[in-house]
Amino acid sequence: MATEGAPKPAAFLDRDGVINVDNGYVYRPEDFAWIDGAREAVKFLNDNAYFVFVVTNQGGVAHGHYEEDDVLSLHRWLNGELALIGARIDAFFYCPHHPDGVREEYRKECHCRKPRPGMLEAAMAEWPVEKSRSFLIGDKPADAEAARAAGVPGYLFNGDNLFDKVRAIVAE
Ligand SMILES: [Mg+2]
Ligand SMILES: [Zn+2]
Image (cartoon, rainbow, N blue to C red; front, side, top):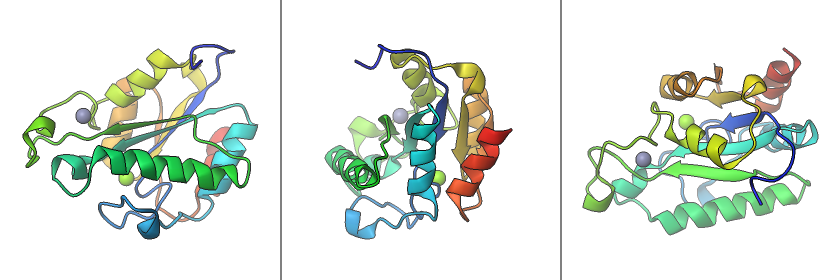
């Protein structure tokens, strides 16, 4: 159960541009290219008693490029790959909406799309997160803004090596 166990800090990771190279509307394993150090970063966070949550805008659903099922199956695949090195993402939060989406059911101003903090708030409502040591890593200002709105520090990542980035933040 998500709500059981001792509180731990959370690392909120944006997906595209942080875990995988942002090639635009990535939804198939064959188009998924790991960022350098991403798998090692997740493992390091697991081993250092952090929750690892992905918080990702997936407006491609609203735009009709792929389905929510594609997002879910890519995330299952991703955790399967991580399992090969004994690592795991504890939970994935994604926003399928977009204010200009072509699919009516997903076209809206939601609270989950970053820069709004809804995905972080959902994670902290569902899991025993120790907020004071939690942080977010993203590659866009909207990521950092979502973090700020949720009350955790947000760090911008330039895409070089996520393991180096995470180690530096955790050492602070
Ligand atoms: Mg991104
Ligand atoms: Zn949303």
